[in-house]
Length: 125
Image (cartoon, rainbow, N blue to C red):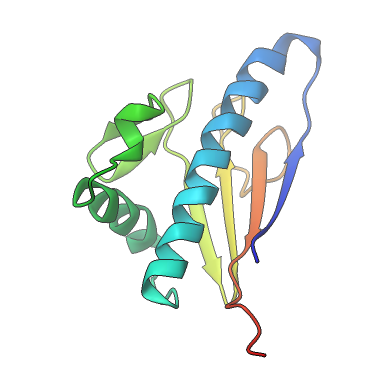
């Protein structure tokens, strides 16, 4: 089971940006979920997880990045304002965030748009 929570703090002028970020982070959340289901676990450092996601999908029949128009720059996926999406992995929770309109990495706070994904393995019956 994958639980997704999206937190967005934006005013009227930022809605288009926030909507695009939410969509792109939803695609990335799905990518993380598929990676977990395929590998059965996620044991990556924050710095390697995004890179490993890109490599994982580049080596599959369905590379989600061009399909969903996600823009890549090296080992980064760029948000609508050309800032790299950030990712943090902590135990069974992955947090993705965009720098927000101000372009400052506030670690998912302030005007950043944040998505939280629970990647705990399914409970055994």
